[in-house]
Image 1: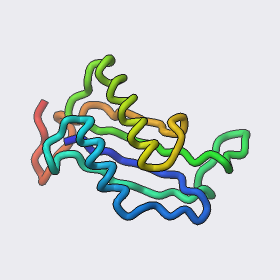
Image 2: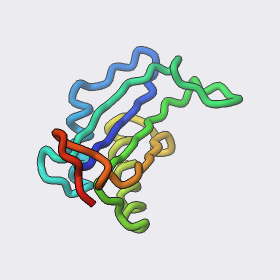
Image 3: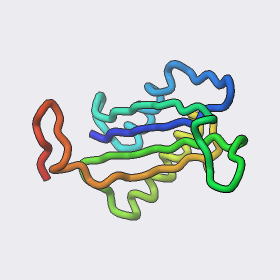
Image 4: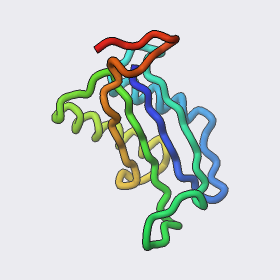
Length: 122
């Protein structure tokens, strides 16, 4: 049930491929070991004029912010391995350097997320 939210700061006139979300879903699903149809990815494009970093000009930096929501979090060692794979895949698909991919793991979803009106169990 991983849900992956990807926010891409876009360059001026950057056109992202229409299949980008599907590629991200397939590749992240492989990393998570998900069954078909169980890793959901949503992509939000943010124009560079809607992004800034404090006390500097960020015009040449176009990062990707990724939030990962999973039923249960992996161990720290497994999470580090997962992060390394996710960073590489997301950087490649989004045409960004590794250092511009930032991943945030959200708290465990079990017991606090509902699908179709049914709360998941811990």
